Length: 276
Image 1: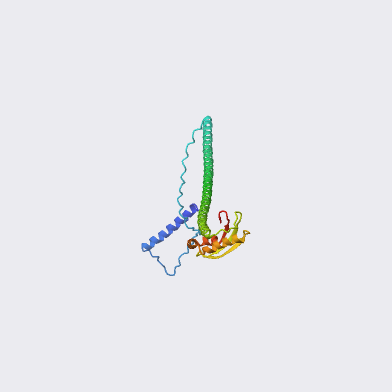
Image 2: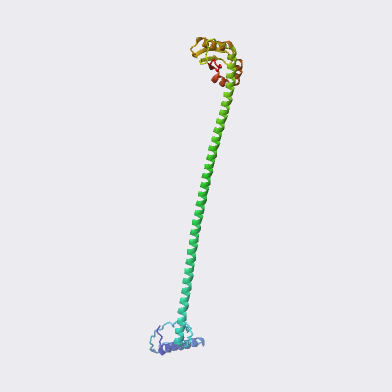
């Protein structure tokens, strides 16, 4: 903003004095007198038009910025001390880096050792499981083989026992059959009449058909001795028995044994001892 100098202040002062005088006359009751037909003498006043500008706005108070306190410059350090401190800082940094590297290396070694231990433990556990499984399989196989051997032995023992039982039964049956054959021979021998033509070397084979009651149903010569009289004497001896009573007992006790041995009975006659 442009501020005028003394001219502006003078104009303002003159204007204020003029207006103040006029106001004072009015207050004191002054009235101007008019004379008729007299014209007042014209008074000329020269005035200069002044440019009245609005008073400038009051400037804002300027706050002086606080000036920072200027610290006094530190005393100049000793270069040797600076060098020593710098070397100490470098050594401390190197020591810290070395400690950090050593710690990292130790952590890496510990992790590697832990990983190795974990792998070894896993391998040992796997080997233990595999060994346990193999041992179990071996035990199961051995048990199965033992069971198979025992079963085979039991079956063999059962077969042997059954064979022994069959042999015993067969022996008992043969003994029983032999006893009944002896009974039959005795009955036939008691009814045989030896013919005069009989010789020691003669032999006739007969086939006798019986029923479960022991009744003789027929007698036939299946191999002749060459002497009809001797052959007929043997046939007559069987027919005279008529019925073997004890064979009825056998057919009731063991029908199969009767059917196998006495349903059709083959007899052999010899004149020397009448051996059947």
